[in-house]
Every structure is written in C-alpha cells, then in structure tokens.
Image (cartoon, rainbow, N blue to C red; front, side, top):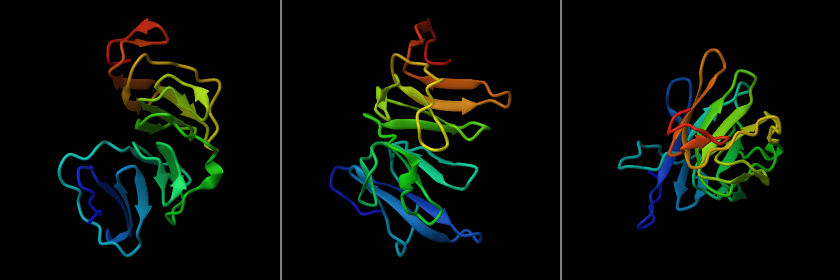
Length: 178
C-alpha cells in the first residue's frame, strides 16, 4: 500500500503487465511522487485528490496533480514518465505554479492542461494551456479562464470542452462549462 503520513492524502498509480499484474507503482505522500518496483499495489480507498493521467501516442505517461517532485526529481504539478517509470527530463520545464486537475491529449499529440494555476512553463496561462509533444508551451493557444479548470475533453471533431469553477473564458461569459 502507499505509505502513510498522518493528516495527508495518499494516492497511488500502478502500471500493469499484459496479464493485469502490477509491474510498478507510483505513490504520492504529501507533495512527492515515488516509484517502488517491489511495492505491492493496492486500490486506494477514501477520497484521494484527483490526479489526472494520460498516455501519449508514443506510450509516455503524463501525470498532473498537486505534487512538487516525482522520484526525487523536481516536477511541479505536471510530469512525463517513460514507460520504464523514469522521469522524462526531455519533456521541458512545464512546471505549474498550482495544481493540474485535468489533462487531455489532442489527435496531434498536443496536451491540453487545466487546473488552478496562473503560470506554466514560466508563461502566463490562466488555468488552461496547450503543451506541444516536446514539452514546450504552444504559443498559438492562449485561452484564459478566470478560475479553476477541473475537466477537459476533446470531442471527435476536435472541439474542446472545459468544465470548472470559471465564469469567463477569454473575457466571454461561460459559466462553469465552455
């Protein structure tokens, strides 16, 4: 099970083999994620915080949430992990100044990221950003929400749907859904 820390919510993520047996686990204690290849993975009970996980077309895993490191490597709220469980340092500096609550992969491999942040990758992006597959911020996408983006979906036609606590997107009234 994920190690416990009094008063902290712990979460875990397991990578399974083709026979659905745990191969490796990531677990969060306080603000750090760690990997333990020998750890027995178990279902997390209680009400853990939402920590989004997506798999990119190349098999790399992108995780978001309220953490500041993964396997002792600094990763503020967003990190890409290789299929072997190691942190992908080639992903660029996509550190966010607040939690990442939602991630979606577009058909071109770009990532849409939403949360409770103002800055990501050192650039102002009010609660939503698009990240290129190499980890750089997509400068062509500059939408801004006035509050938390908690959910992102990409429709089959490529349109983006957002949900959250916002009342405007780019200054246009959009109460909680856009």
